[in-house]
Image (cartoon, rainbow, N blue to C red; front, side, top):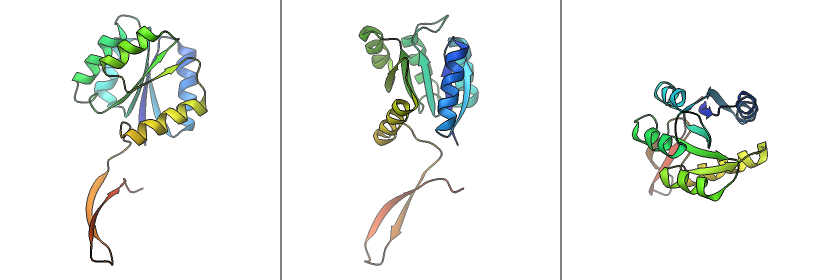
Length: 149
């Protein structure tokens, strides 16, 4: 199962986002501030991270940069969540965020953004293995196989 870390200082926002992400098949953890988010990235190694623009104790762009420097955070897909304002979104994207959401967002928009991230190869849930297979036409091709359940 894919994992997600929601980093937001507001408990109601974390709860609402958790509900949406669990309905989309994610296992969800939450963090109230930047320090807790970094600890969670190290321990959980989430597939997806939703970072609020106004986390206490650290600037979001610096937090994204620090997450990207961690082995556990280098492969994570990071969504920057803002109340609006192009300057903050641009700074987060330049720091390494993969996409952004504007509050309030709903299940349909979140689902659409997740599909875009998967299509770009940003969101990789579970391990995938590449295998060389031969079909009946005697030609070789590569196939990607997901984790068996």
